[in-house]
Length: 362
Image (cartoon, rainbow, N blue to C red; front, top):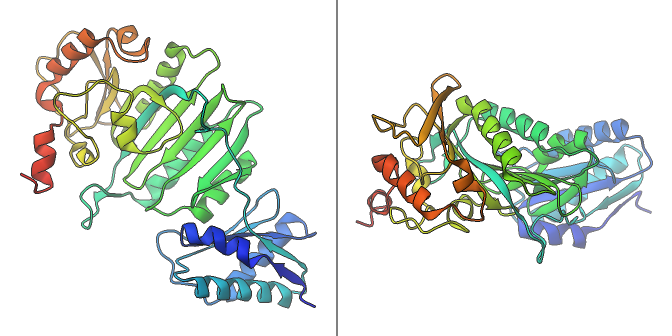
């Protein structure tokens, strides 16, 4: 009789969605002991060549997670599960390999008002030669950013979720980083969320294009503390980002294009921000009320008196509009204020024509 039961069908159903094989091991062993055991077993297996996503083992409330990246076929994924089970059995241990449950984190649930405030940033990195819009972010920078995200994404009495490989996993605050690491790769989205009911949420979403969004929803829905907090956050990240901005936004969608374009007044200068990230080291998508500009951004000289400019980090600028209520108090900015702000920034704004030229469409 096998000492390790494997729920292969359920595990492989999850694998079909994205080629990261993930399971958790349920046993009676103490957590540190079983984590060490699983790491030993993985070290003896013939695993797919490691890519940017490393996989590995992470503590988890139901039993340690095991993740293997780049299992490129159903047959290969199945054989890896068999080898994992055999390796555990060889250690004289009993238990079960089960599919990770898909916990619902409230964020994005239909019918709930997810209108909050968010800071969106584009990290420093190198343009991927295979995709003009994709950024290759240094591992050290991403690791530091994740630490910032974990510190910021917390609420008293909140429930923590980690989303990777299209699954939402509920875990403890201390388990988040390791759980995220097992499922993360630079070509898929991932996020941390801390939820204290549907009216108090923090979420940090990482996208494949080198962009990150820090979103918050508060019970009183007041804009002042949210905007002040997110402006301070941007300032603290100045040396790690090439651009950042704060705006009202709907939480739950980590897409940079959605963050930039949806629930926002039409832009006469830029119709679609999907491919505009290429220009972010030198220009900006719009005249948001709070922005951090990097050393490559050239502010108009003289700067219109509607703006304040403060140096942050070693060579960046925190640009803030003097009339923040007109830009943040209501669901959309006051039209005249936004129009004047756009005119005042002039050539700093990215244009549709530039995007077309960069893509070879014009």
